[in-house]
Length: 190
Image (cartoon, rainbow, N blue to C red; front, side):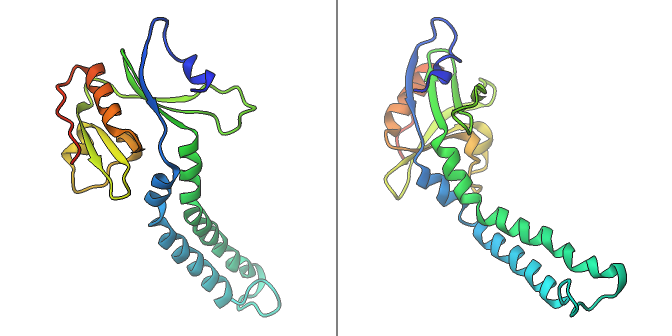
Protein backbone atom coordinates (compact mmCIF):
# COMPACT_ATOMS: atom_id res chain seq x y z
CA UNK A 1 0.00 0.00 0.00
CA UNK A 2 1.26 3.52 -0.71
CA UNK A 3 2.81 5.33 2.27
CA UNK A 4 0.32 8.22 2.01
CA UNK A 5 -2.51 5.78 2.77
CA UNK A 6 -0.74 4.07 5.65
CA UNK A 7 -0.08 7.55 7.06
CA UNK A 8 -3.88 8.00 7.36
CA UNK A 9 -4.11 5.12 9.85
CA UNK A 10 -4.33 5.93 13.52
CA UNK A 11 -1.70 4.52 15.90
CA UNK A 12 -2.48 0.89 16.68
CA UNK A 13 -4.96 0.51 13.80
CA UNK A 14 -4.45 -2.87 12.15
CA UNK A 15 -5.20 -3.54 8.48
CA UNK A 16 -7.36 -6.65 8.09
CA UNK A 17 -7.60 -6.51 4.30
CA UNK A 18 -6.71 -4.17 1.45
CA UNK A 19 -7.28 -4.40 -2.27
CA UNK A 20 -7.69 -2.49 -5.48
CA UNK A 21 -10.46 -2.50 -8.08
CA UNK A 22 -9.87 -3.73 -11.61
CA UNK A 23 -9.87 -0.71 -13.97
CA UNK A 24 -11.87 -2.65 -16.55
CA UNK A 25 -14.83 -2.84 -14.15
CA UNK A 26 -14.84 0.94 -13.73
CA UNK A 27 -14.46 1.50 -17.49
CA UNK A 28 -17.45 -0.76 -18.20
CA UNK A 29 -19.57 1.30 -15.81
CA UNK A 30 -18.80 4.41 -17.86
CA UNK A 31 -19.51 2.97 -21.30
CA UNK A 32 -23.17 4.12 -21.46
CA UNK A 33 -21.87 7.69 -21.37
CA UNK A 34 -20.38 7.18 -24.83
CA UNK A 35 -23.89 7.44 -26.27
CA UNK A 36 -24.38 10.79 -24.53
CA UNK A 37 -21.01 11.97 -25.79
CA UNK A 38 -21.79 11.15 -29.38
CA UNK A 39 -25.27 12.70 -29.11
CA UNK A 40 -24.07 15.99 -27.63
CA UNK A 41 -21.06 16.20 -29.95
CA UNK A 42 -23.14 15.59 -33.08
CA UNK A 43 -25.77 18.07 -31.88
CA UNK A 44 -23.10 20.76 -31.43
CA UNK A 45 -21.45 19.99 -34.78
CA UNK A 46 -24.85 20.04 -36.53
CA UNK A 47 -25.65 23.40 -34.96
CA UNK A 48 -22.30 24.85 -36.00
CA UNK A 49 -22.55 23.49 -39.53
CA UNK A 50 -26.19 24.49 -39.93
CA UNK A 51 -25.46 28.08 -38.97
CA UNK A 52 -22.73 28.29 -41.61
CA UNK A 53 -19.88 28.73 -39.17
CA UNK A 54 -18.14 31.99 -38.47
CA UNK A 55 -16.76 32.80 -41.93
CA UNK A 56 -18.32 34.55 -44.90
CA UNK A 57 -20.93 31.78 -45.30
CA UNK A 58 -22.51 32.48 -41.92
CA UNK A 59 -26.29 32.75 -41.89
CA UNK A 60 -26.07 35.65 -39.43
CA UNK A 61 -25.06 39.31 -39.78
CA UNK A 62 -23.38 41.68 -37.33
CA UNK A 63 -22.75 40.50 -33.81
CA UNK A 64 -25.17 37.61 -34.44
CA UNK A 65 -22.26 35.92 -36.22
CA UNK A 66 -21.26 34.75 -32.73
CA UNK A 67 -24.32 32.45 -32.54
CA UNK A 68 -22.42 29.49 -34.07
CA UNK A 69 -19.97 29.68 -31.16
CA UNK A 70 -22.83 28.72 -28.83
CA UNK A 71 -22.41 25.20 -30.23
CA UNK A 72 -18.96 24.85 -28.62
CA UNK A 73 -20.31 23.98 -25.12
CA UNK A 74 -22.28 21.11 -26.67
CA UNK A 75 -19.18 19.83 -28.46
CA UNK A 76 -17.08 20.14 -25.29
CA UNK A 77 -19.79 18.36 -23.27
CA UNK A 78 -19.73 15.59 -25.87
CA UNK A 79 -15.98 15.17 -25.40
CA UNK A 80 -16.44 15.18 -21.63
CA UNK A 81 -19.00 12.37 -21.81
CA UNK A 82 -16.92 10.52 -24.37
CA UNK A 83 -13.79 10.47 -22.16
CA UNK A 84 -15.66 9.63 -18.92
CA UNK A 85 -14.85 5.87 -19.09
CA UNK A 86 -11.17 6.68 -19.43
CA UNK A 87 -11.33 8.98 -16.40
CA UNK A 88 -13.03 6.19 -14.42
CA UNK A 89 -10.24 3.78 -15.40
CA UNK A 90 -7.66 6.29 -14.16
CA UNK A 91 -9.65 6.67 -10.93
CA UNK A 92 -9.55 2.90 -10.41
CA UNK A 93 -5.75 2.93 -10.65
CA UNK A 94 -5.61 5.47 -7.81
CA UNK A 95 -8.23 3.74 -5.61
CA UNK A 96 -7.55 1.45 -2.63
CA UNK A 97 -10.11 -0.43 -0.56
CA UNK A 98 -9.06 -0.80 3.06
CA UNK A 99 -10.63 -2.68 5.97
CA UNK A 100 -9.08 -2.15 9.39
CA UNK A 101 -10.07 -3.29 12.84
CA UNK A 102 -11.63 0.17 13.46
CA UNK A 103 -13.07 1.35 10.14
CA UNK A 104 -13.74 0.61 6.48
CA UNK A 105 -12.79 3.14 3.84
CA UNK A 106 -12.03 3.83 0.19
CA UNK A 107 -8.85 5.86 -0.35
CA UNK A 108 -8.14 7.77 -3.53
CA UNK A 109 -4.56 8.98 -3.94
CA UNK A 110 -3.63 12.25 -5.65
CA UNK A 111 -3.68 12.41 -9.43
CA UNK A 112 -0.04 13.41 -9.64
CA UNK A 113 2.53 11.47 -7.61
CA UNK A 114 4.60 14.65 -7.28
CA UNK A 115 1.90 16.41 -5.31
CA UNK A 116 1.89 15.87 -1.57
CA UNK A 117 -1.88 16.00 -1.23
CA UNK A 118 -3.29 13.54 1.28
CA UNK A 119 -5.55 10.84 -0.13
CA UNK A 120 -9.28 11.43 -0.26
CA UNK A 121 -11.01 9.06 2.15
CA UNK A 122 -14.56 7.77 1.90
CA UNK A 123 -15.16 6.28 5.36
CA UNK A 124 -18.25 4.11 5.81
CA UNK A 125 -20.13 5.07 8.98
CA UNK A 126 -21.94 2.53 11.14
CA UNK A 127 -25.30 4.24 10.43
CA UNK A 128 -25.07 3.81 6.67
CA UNK A 129 -23.65 0.29 6.63
CA UNK A 130 -25.68 -2.86 6.24
CA UNK A 131 -24.55 -6.45 6.34
CA UNK A 132 -22.23 -6.74 3.32
CA UNK A 133 -23.63 -8.40 0.22
CA UNK A 134 -21.15 -10.14 -2.06
CA UNK A 135 -22.14 -10.42 -5.72
CA UNK A 136 -20.21 -12.43 -8.27
CA UNK A 137 -19.97 -10.72 -11.63
CA UNK A 138 -20.15 -12.46 -15.00
CA UNK A 139 -16.48 -11.60 -15.61
CA UNK A 140 -15.38 -13.53 -12.53
CA UNK A 141 -14.77 -10.54 -10.25
CA UNK A 142 -16.78 -9.62 -7.16
CA UNK A 143 -18.73 -6.58 -5.99
CA UNK A 144 -19.15 -6.06 -2.25
CA UNK A 145 -22.13 -3.79 -1.53
CA UNK A 146 -21.88 -2.13 1.88
CA UNK A 147 -24.50 0.64 2.19
CA UNK A 148 -28.15 0.37 3.16
CA UNK A 149 -29.07 2.89 0.45
CA UNK A 150 -27.66 0.65 -2.31
CA UNK A 151 -29.31 -2.47 -0.88
CA UNK A 152 -32.67 -0.72 -0.52
CA UNK A 153 -32.67 0.03 -4.28
CA UNK A 154 -31.71 -3.24 -5.98
CA UNK A 155 -33.20 -2.05 -9.28
CA UNK A 156 -30.55 0.70 -9.51
CA UNK A 157 -26.86 0.13 -10.19
CA UNK A 158 -25.03 1.04 -6.97
CA UNK A 159 -22.79 4.09 -7.05
CA UNK A 160 -19.06 3.47 -6.88
CA UNK A 161 -18.93 4.91 -3.37
CA UNK A 162 -21.46 2.33 -2.08
CA UNK A 163 -18.97 -0.50 -1.73
CA UNK A 164 -16.00 -2.32 -3.18
CA UNK A 165 -16.23 -3.13 -6.90
CA UNK A 166 -14.12 -5.28 -9.21
CA UNK A 167 -12.43 -7.41 -6.56
CA UNK A 168 -10.47 -10.55 -7.32
CA UNK A 169 -10.71 -11.89 -3.77
CA UNK A 170 -14.26 -11.05 -2.79
CA UNK A 171 -14.64 -13.68 -0.06
CA UNK A 172 -11.59 -12.38 1.83
CA UNK A 173 -12.92 -8.82 1.62
CA UNK A 174 -16.36 -9.88 2.87
CA UNK A 175 -14.92 -11.82 5.80
CA UNK A 176 -12.68 -8.85 6.72
CA UNK A 177 -15.68 -6.49 6.62
CA UNK A 178 -17.67 -8.93 8.76
CA UNK A 179 -14.81 -9.13 11.26
CA UNK A 180 -14.46 -5.35 11.38
CA UNK A 181 -18.18 -4.64 11.80
CA UNK A 182 -19.00 -7.75 13.82
CA UNK A 183 -21.71 -8.79 11.32
CA UNK A 184 -22.45 -12.48 11.06
CA UNK A 185 -20.80 -14.13 8.07
CA UNK A 186 -23.90 -14.14 5.85
CA UNK A 187 -22.29 -12.71 2.73
CA UNK A 188 -22.08 -15.75 0.47
CA UNK A 189 -21.76 -14.85 -3.22
CA UNK A 190 -25.02 -14.48 -5.12
